[in-house]
Length: 501
Image (cartoon, rainbow, N blue to C red; front, side, top):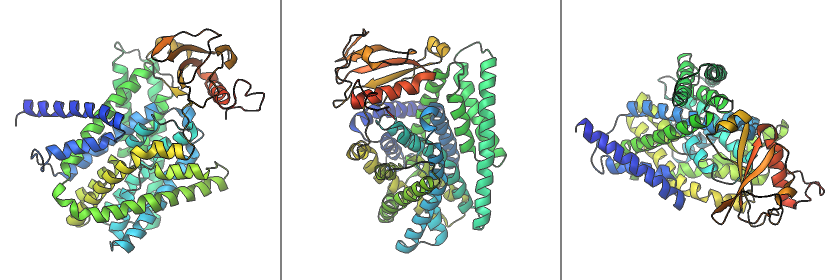
């Protein structure tokens, strides 16, 4: 086929995938499954396009994951994840180790796998998927602390997982002590590079006046790849470097920050579409039946045993160290919300490409991981809102960020928050002046029954109203606490000792 035919086919797939995102959003079906289905349809069992190059798939997959992590870092709100960071780091390190060991021991006993393949399967499945977690959690009304734990964990746990899979895929596996030392060194180098590139990038962007505003988002993405490639060249973790660098940049006052985030989000969606379609093409449906039973068994071990056990052990560690205290409801939700997506499938291409284990075994591991991702994403993703509600963790009145490309907001160091008034909220009937927000915050607009209007001080808030609040960054936390306190106890919340924490 000529280049024009490939361009037409590629553009058609991207447009169809964009339409599918809308369908998936309405139906609750994870969009990644639709993208994988596109890949299967145009692959060897559909239109007949042959693609069986694990080396190329691995290289493209790792680059796409770096783009997705860059978007995750740029759009993560540091004020929301700051308190959750120590817990997330424990989950991303100790939790990964517990998950690998648990899955490996179980599949070795139940599926009669050799130890190396068992550990490899456990390592491939250990990482939660950043794209899946970000896309689900940012439209799910959760307490900011809990959402912050899941976001930060998914951003950090790719790094140790990739290192573990690389070590297990090598021709000669190191001893446990050597492996732990190598992991620690690679993570340290990645962290240093990321924390160096991020601030230096912000410093440069503030002082270099580019002639076109559209160059700033491109520069930010280029800096993300400087962090990734620089860390890899120094034998460090590129994924940790790119996430930390973009986390710093995304939470700094740099020029055109909102447009940089929007650009990164668009590029990340394109990376996701291309990645999942490619992985769908790489899969061979004719080989999947033999992987269904082992895949379901390994997935059940992961979801029902390994993930809950890793959460419980990490919760005990953070409580003993007086870092955090996770309730049983939060632990249950964290256990169910360990979504797997493209990351495990991409990681499964590493041993396949390395040929370090028998090619048939490596392909079997890939097929098993593919089955696990499809089945358990279909099971877990759509049910998360119901699980959150059943556990009493859903918070529809939680203030949410709205990204606005607005020069005045940038100059004022201000944020725009959206608050929706749920049916049980005691915000109903409260007049705007009775909110008693800080002087640097103001309810600027109310959306009611599809109609928008600017409220006065005597405007009464009603159930299902959406409030837009402009606040300076300095008093943002106070605004969120005040809104939550009134929602729980009414306009006399402070009198009753309710502080919204």
